Image: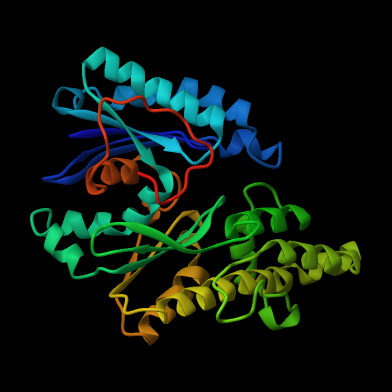
Length: 340
């Protein structure tokens, strides 16, 4: 059994995973309310809250500890103070229990997360079932990252495309801030967009060239700011749902277009969608349409495994073959997908 620790940003999380049964227990402590008044995550505050939350979460896992054979912890990418706190906690657990500790790449965990449900359905048959879905294209769309990653038949990962500036999640949150919505604002934009007409406000689609897989969301935020400068407070209030609908559509269509272009590069056998933004219904529907148009199965991470969570970290510690045990695990704020 694997006990996993996640603390890369503002979610404190623990989970246990048994290869014979799947993810057994999960617990998450969110800091969103504490960071709301600051309009974003404050790293030092987040790390202090991890220090308080992780020991309390551990109480829920006391009965699992005798069966734990190793401890996995997110080592990057993420906020350095937060990663450091989680690693220190994992090291302390390892020292106290005599279990080895392994470091897990947070982005690789996102790539693996859509396969968690497949494993849970048939743990014994999972290796063969996964093999039929490879090579796999993973769309990882989160607050800090927007990536298209190839998971090959040998389980090696290769980044095909990434954003050149802001991630899609950042575009949602920064756009929400410009609109006067509280942090985190992505879900609020989605809620308002459902009531609006996306054709009323047109926003740029980043890098429109089909052959160029790179993504860009910074210009979208700038375009929103320019549009808002032309509106009175009364106009903004009355047009807010339409603005949110147009803004969200620009993000969704760029993600769908780049995913479709990547799928046309080679004979992929499946598509995956993960990361916090994968909980957006518009994003899910658009990527599902892209997969359906190419007669490919879509694996979407469950809602609880889209944001920062320890379940995917525990699963990746098992699924990502070759993770070294018993070596120094150090935090890395910038950790590429290609490294385990």
